[in-house]
Length: 216
Image (cartoon, rainbow, N blue to C red; front, side):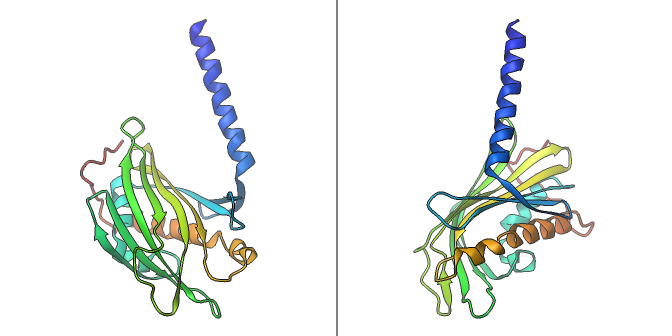
């Protein structure tokens, strides 16, 4: 009887979580295996996005790609420059990126503090991202992104199969109307995840093993 009650409670909890997700997030794009959702974000007119894709790759290979900051220009959407001004440890550091904007909007730049952690029970790897507005000097010709929060998440589904989640809310800075930002908000998660999948699933991309990351 106690087991039945436990199972019933678990099913109700899962149903509640599923309903909460569907009520909060709206599916805006589903293409080439990528799903992109958006939802309102507290005290902001710019929506938050969440992109998801499942790839045939171990977590170490994906994490190695995301950790190769100088390579962002090759696969991250509209990134024209990327560097890591400070690496505190293997799991903690700062990145700096410049993002190309279409004329007449100025390019944006963003300073990000990141941490990498793995849940010992689920083996899920989370790369938490926080914008740090004043970490780097302002650069002529760009507008500094004033606020950003989000994460990459690597969820092991089976051996050699990983679900990748990319979720971010970001204020654009400057005078770009939120309606314009929201109209194109699915582009970044779609192309970042689509390009990531193509890279890590390529036979030319070597499998990577990251110390301290436990695979399935």
